[in-house]
Length: 468
Image 1 (cartoon, one colour):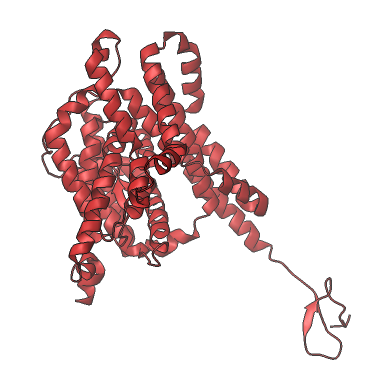
Image 2 (cartoon, rainbow, N blue to C red):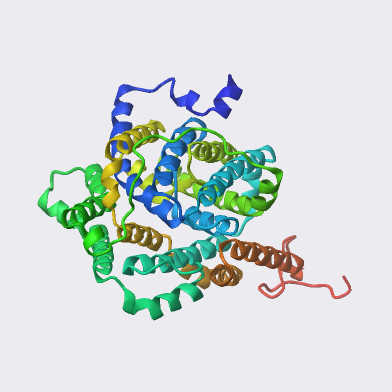
């Protein structure tokens, strides 16, 4: 029984589950739905995949993680960082937009899931703590800048750049700015302004207009701003036929049915080609998710189990693959909303998944008119939150070694790409660690007069014996 409880965490809390907890979980699940829908579609767009794949990945990942994860409020599904890495890895083996591109992304998710499960066998949960925080910060900051830069063409109504490097995208935008679609640009810029105003001012306005609102509902309304932008933009594009009259790029047809469930066939050659990328993405999935899970759990004085998280995240990625999705991880925005909305157990994630299924079947047709500029705006706002200026400042003020590691990782990710940048950061981190270990602090000590205590000769008035 102890082994079952350890491997299947939901068996522990399900025994004592109460009706009032179901109410709390249901409310949280409904609230999280309103940000999961636009983000899942947006991150599928970021990964170069059909919109429905984001919804498929979210549905199956939420259900799978609820059974095997140890965090009670972690919302697993598509995320900006993992979508960006998926795009970079998959683009090497298939043309973006092709059927092969879709299949390769599903294979990548399956392989990531298997790797995470294999890492559990070697207790990798304990090993990951040795990776420098500066590497993670440098990687996330640079990746966020890459993500933002790559959404600028979509905001302006320009075609996608030939590659994702900053040095390619910026000239592409500068030289193509005269070809911008002014209607698309208006939608994109207005959406960013709207989302920013909701983030900074909506809470204060609601407190003054509706003082009776509880903090839970207030937070839920503010955090659901992406869904408001989606609904308003769909109404505008459909009402004025902007997709036809003004050439506004839209999401198009989303199948109003669940995918066919099944494993994608992988050859040994597929494994050899995808394994390096899958291993790196697996590490990022684990780091990103456990960091978020730990932060959420600490607010409740709870703990997560890193090794069990490997199982939960591994099963979630396998489930995303067989459900027609792409690689997934824990989402900070959705987890924070889940936690602040009163989620008590992973039942909240199951509620979100069930509502996603209903939304996909009942409302998929409405997403036809969703402009891609809105998705770019949602992605940009999500990526901005990944850049923690205060954390970077602390790194440079208090730790010179971490500052060097951060700088190398940051510029390596920008210049060489996400995967190569991570490897450079890890290498620099280990080199600096070895250098520090090879030069330990050495002090000459002397005895305090009349005692048996010894102290550093440079800081204390002590007795020394030159012949000793």
